Length: 138
Image 1 (spheres, rainbow, N blue to C red):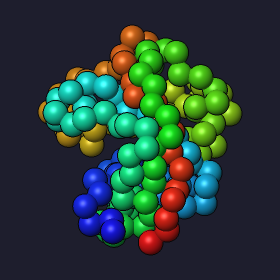
Image 2: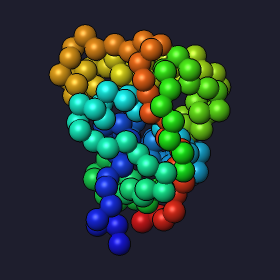
Image 3: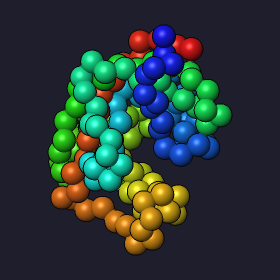
Image 4: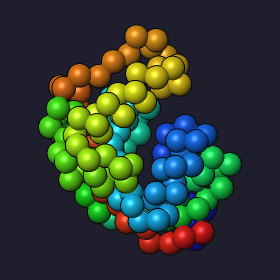
């Protein structure tokens, strides 16, 4: 079953996570972006094609199982429009996608989580671009 699967958490619990989970469940969100240094800092393995994980909502309830279908590591400055659109947040340009993500990465919650109140990203920041599909709704 899903008890042995790793958790998939989009953003921090709250309104943003709720919107992202709703986009996953509707099929609008089929991609996500993470900073490579976050995986390294946590000692967390990178996503692997074919791996499955349990999406949890803001109340920590499992709502879906997703399967990774593609993983790429690129510079933040090289994220393409297809990926930005597939994040399911309504971005119609890479610039809008970048502004939205920088607001998150430069926001107080993220900076506090990283333990760095001055944390910033730039074009050369390596990011993990992951594509996935929903294989089960809970």
